[in-house]
Structure formats: C-alpha cells, structure tokens
Amino acid sequence: MVRLVFELFERLGTVHAVLRFLVEHRVQIGMRERSGPGKGEVVWRPPHQQGLVNMLRNPAYAGIYAYGRSRTDPSRRRPGREHSGRVRGLQAEQWQVRIDGALPAYIGAEQYERNLARMAANRARADSLGAPRDGPALLAGLVVCGHCGQRMQVAYEAGACGPVHRYCCQRRHHTYGEPRCQQMAGRCVDDHVVSQVLDALAPAALEVSLAAAEQIEAHRAQVDRIWRQRRERAEYAAERARRQYQLAEPENRLVVRQLEREWEQALAARAQFAEDHARFARQHPTRLSGAEQTAIRALAADIPALWSAPTTTTADRKRLIRAVVDQVTVTAAGTSEQVHATITWAGGHQTHADLVRPVARLDQLSYHPALVARLAELVDAGLGNAAIADQLAADGFRTPHLRERFNVGEIQHLARRLGLRPGLDHDRRTDRGSLGPDQWWLTDLARQIAMPAATLYTWVRRGWATGRQDSRPPYRWIITANHAEVERLRALHQLPAGYHNRRRWTDDPADQQFQHQHGGNTS
Image (cartoon, rainbow, N blue to C red; front, side):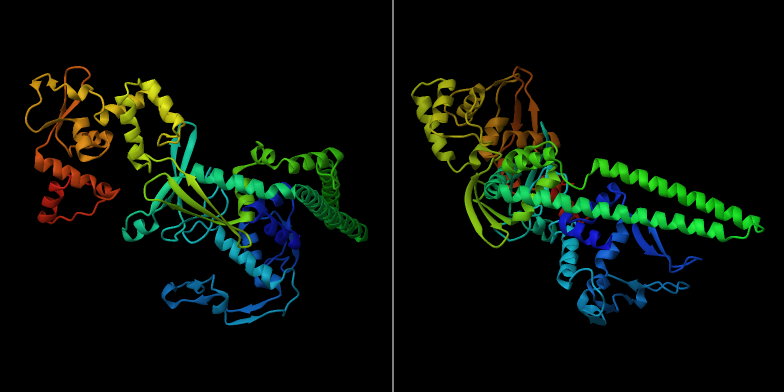
C-alpha cells in the first residue's frame, strides 16, 4: 500500500488525484494507534488528504533520518499552552540533523526531493505552475512574458459560448504599479501549442498504446493484490475469533457471548470482503480484454481523436501538455496583432513561430495604414460596401478579431469615421438648430481625441464629460467642449489602463482639486 501511494503520486502528480484513486478502489491506509488500549497496533482506515501529504513529506520513507524538522518560535508561544509556537515546514538545509541511507527505504532520496518539488509547484502561487485544473486555459502556468520574464496570469470573462480566457502580464503592475507588459487572447496561443504537441506525439502512437496497456494492467494487478491481502486479513481475523471462542470455558457465559458476537462479526466481514472483491474483479479484471486492447490501440493511433474525446477532461489535456512542454514564451509587437511564440520542450529543445492574435481596435493592426489607404482607393473608385468588403478579403485584410471578411456595416462605419463618405455627422442640425460654438457630435469629438466613441460615451454617463442627447432621430449625443476641455479629455485618455479605478487620493484639498481637474471621481 505504501509503495502504491508513491507510485500513484509519481503517475498522477497531485495528492487529491491519489486520494480519488484510493477511494475509488476502496484501498485503506494502515497506521498505528497512538493512544488507547490498542496503542501500537496497526489499524486500517480510509485514506485522507493530510495523511497522504504527511507520507509524501516524511523523509523516513526515503531512508533519511531527520531531526529538527520543526522548531519553537518564542514569539508565537501562548500562555498556558505548552506545545504552542511550533514552526513546521522547514527546508532541508534548516534541519539540525540529516543522515541519508540510515533507514530502510521505499523510495530513493531523488524521488523524495522530486515529490516535494512537485507538491510545491502544485500550489497556486505566483512562482509556481499550479496543479492542472478544469479551466479552459490549457497553458495556465506555462506562459511566460517575453518582455519581463514573469509568469503570465490567466483572466477569465464570460463569452457567448462560455468562459473566454486571456493571458495577462500584470504581476509587476499589481505589485509595483508599473504599466502592464502585455496581454493577449489565449485561444490563439493554445491552438498553436496543441497542434505542435499533437504533431510531436504522432510518431509515438505504437509506444503510447503499449505503455498504456502495460500501465493499466500493472495497476490493476497491484490493486488486486491489495484486495487479496485484505481478504487474508479478514480470514485471519475470523480464524482467530473462532479459536478464541473454542478455547473459552463454557462456565464463563459472559465471555463466551462476547467472543461469539466477535466471531460472527468477523465471519460477516470476511463474507463482505469476498463479495466486494468478486464484484471489483468483474468490473476491473487484471488482464485487459481483447476489446479494451483494440480500443487502446485505436485511440493511440488517432491521438487527435483521443484529445477531442468527450471523456478526456481539460485537466487531462493540461497534464499531457505539461508532460512534453516546459514553457511557452510569448512576445507581442506592441499592441499589434503580431506575436512571437517560443515553445521550450521537455529536454530543452525550442521551436519558434510567429502568430496572429485578435486585437480590440482596428488602429492596433500593423497593417492599419495600408488598410485605410486601400479603403480610400476603393471608395474613390465608386465601389459599394459589399464589393469593398469582398476586395479587402481578396487582398488579405482581416478584421481585428481575425474574421476573414469585413461585413457591410463595418465598411460603412469605417468609411464614415475616416471621412471618406458623408454620413450623419455631416448634418449639423439639432433639435435646437445648428451645433453651437464648442459643441461636437460624440463621434466627431472621439475622432478628434483619437479614442473609441464607446469610451467617450461611458465618460459622459459617468459625468467626466458634459453632453446631452439630441431629441431628433437618430438621437445622437452632443458634447460641449472648448479647446481646454478637449485637451483635458485627451490627457485623460492617455493615462494608463486602470488608472481611473484606483483609489489613491487623500483628504488633502489640493489633491481633491487636482482630482476634479483630471477626471472627477476616480473611485
């Protein structure tokens, strides 16, 4: 059983996965009673997570004698509590004594150190990979920023088809208030790495099938051996109860009755173990059937199908990627769609690729000037919106979200925003006549400041800009802003992302005056 725990952790990688396996196969853990009448005796109980953690952390299983793995911190002592103030979890170099090879070992010292490192990596911390979980980000913990070298975090948001993730380098932003390095949609990076991993695994299909079959049979045989040992213990307990009952004097009726009850309980436990073992053997035979072997070979021969199978969980896919990939370094070219990705494989080999990611705005595209020039040529040629969309697709221009073709509405809006065609903004009439001095249509002012119209509309709703809605259809917004106000809004737009949501102002009147002049309430 002890060897099974270490082998399972080596294969499954997390303590909770080991616990689930033991519970599923009804494997019990042997331990010695520490107090009571049965002190020192071995009892068998269901496994629990902390007990498995203690086993993996205990150096005695690796043959290491250790002393001083904990110490007492006087500052943590509590009056009246003798054993308070203990500090545990010290590093090996902080132990007072360590003697390798002093005890019989189940595992080697190298595997012991590897288990500790793996448990530390499973913790959800900034400097660790974290255990594979069920979130859709397949490269969580593996993506590293090519600008600063920090591990990138995963951010989720609701999408039309479920959670959408992106990789963000914002650790130094949160810690030191520095600007964010980069962020990008996670799907494009995930798809590239998955295709590379599947291509790398394709030549090993036969070896994968053979190894899978051998591994399954080995673990089934090991679990079956544990079941047989449990049945042997039940047989021994029933035989021991029988001998005790037969050796008792009939005159001691109370003793005989108690021994009879214990014998009956032992016989019932033996019968239950035999029934459970038979049921388990039928569900999990030691040898794989011909149908199971055929299914394993078919799945291993078509690894993409195995990857996409509904029975393959997201955590399984993450574990498969981590088995062959150590790190994925991504470097975006500014805010453009161009990304350079470097995959560092297990063993140190690297592969490089240039990717294209979706961006938020059209002006972030690296080919935005060429797109605008080509659009102007097509408008001057008198082409309609549908014809322009077809021609741009034929020329290889893609939307910011990487769609193959602009739709007609996007072409019409873009042409009007760039001033290539007259639109509603050329109509200066309002419900009160023409636009007055220092009055702007919202889209005109947004174009003047070089900011998204949706952002300017949000500022109006927040009170950061002054505006009203026209009562004539199509009910456009009119913004009042003189030259100084336009410059203030431009300066406000150039502040770092997230600046407006920080609570940094004190009660100093001078600070409040500065706050009012640069955007109002920032809380």
